[in-house]
Image: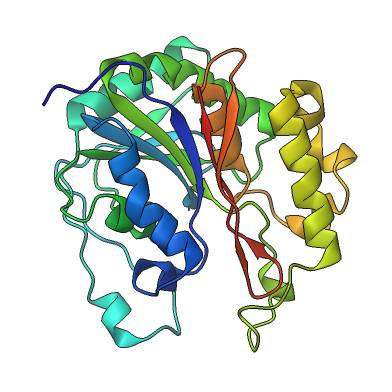
Length: 263
């Protein structure tokens, strides 16, 4: 079946690697998400766990599955997500970024980290859609990542699904590991509500200045790499994207797993 044109771009919170195997509201949401969308010809996915000082694009024809975590049950390390790569698309992604004034390089031996394969395993369990991983810059800002996304927006008309995979609220030091179902902490709720309001009203100035303007911004994201994929996805939605909230849930009292579509 030919891929319809103009897919949305997505921001997905991938949470703990256990999302790949455990039953949870976020997991069940991802299980159904692939069936809700037009079938993509390929996926370009910016992951919070692919961190570089300049944009890098994974160009491997058969990327390996990376288990970039520790302390989890052994079966998690035995999972493979054997999706093919798309070297030609990776070349075009890098060229698009460079043409937009965002110098990018290919990393031909790069695999699929858990920010990539955990959500994709639930969305597309057959691993039959080509995947191109894209890095984020932990020392970059929202405007830089928005520009990356905007350079990739035209790919949506070619049946390419652009995804940012990160975390809507992500402070591992404040997780309540003993109570997975604990209510969302007030500071995390206030940050999430502010972000939702800014996204829904399209207040780009506020969003780009989130670290200065959002309540509890540093508490919600002591480091920025898990929020930067949101700005890639937002930029890939176009110049004035419409935001649709697809999912809201949380775990461990402060890990917000919200998801959005931009179109």
